Amino acid sequence: MSVPFSEVISTSRIFILVSLVGVSCLAAPAAAQSVENRIVLFGDAAQEVPADEATLQVNLSFSDERDIKPVYGEHEKARLQLVDLLEQSKIPLKDIQFSQLLTRRGRDSYRGQPGERFTSYQRAMIKFTDLDRLREVQQTLTTGGFTDLTATFSVSNQRQIELDLMEKAIGRAKEKASQAAKATSRTIKRIVRVSDVGENEGFYSYRENFRANLPQNQVSYDNDALRQMMTIPQVFRFSALVRVDFELNE
Image 1: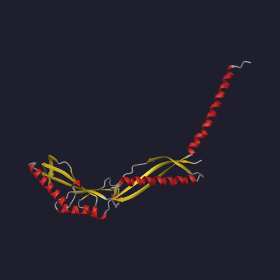
Image 2: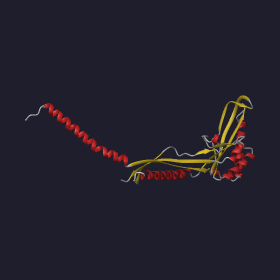
Image 3: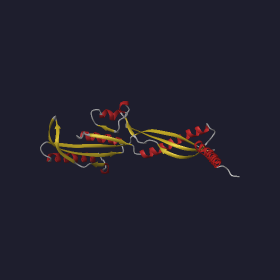
Image 4: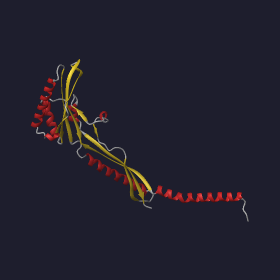
């Protein structure tokens, strides 16, 4: 018996529709199971660490409005005097660095009087792993006439601290994940993925709130500097924030 063409089309449409529904019904449980079998938690850890290293910077600069030769002469005399004071303080040569000597000629203001001047500039950098020695040497230098000083501070084992904080952050994420899984009568099977969230960088913080957001860890030896050095500790805050994907047991 022959079947009208219109009925064949209708039957085919019904078959295709049923087939698509069947595929959808089969795929849906797999997707739902994948979502329900994972849990994502964040973990964090932080630590404040006092600086244990410092670099003292001594700025050498001289100028003359007539000739460059006196500038070179004064500069070299000061550099040799500085080296002599550092040797007397028993600073190893490996801990002393000098930047390249720079000179310029241009309009500048000296004692309120603008004019053409020859100027030299150079920086000496002394590394300290003992902050008590930093205090001793800075006193020696300022007594010897070197008063244009700045200091920067750092933490020697910063990288290890960051790794330790990362491990603690992952552990805290796991604690939270275990608690969350317990609420659904499940347990943690394994960690699927760990990603670092944000930048684990240290920053220098003053105790006063108005200085808390300074972008650098430099202390200048200006009129207020001695008070800073005596009353404000050099502290770095390190932090770690991680996202951890966990797979749950059935």
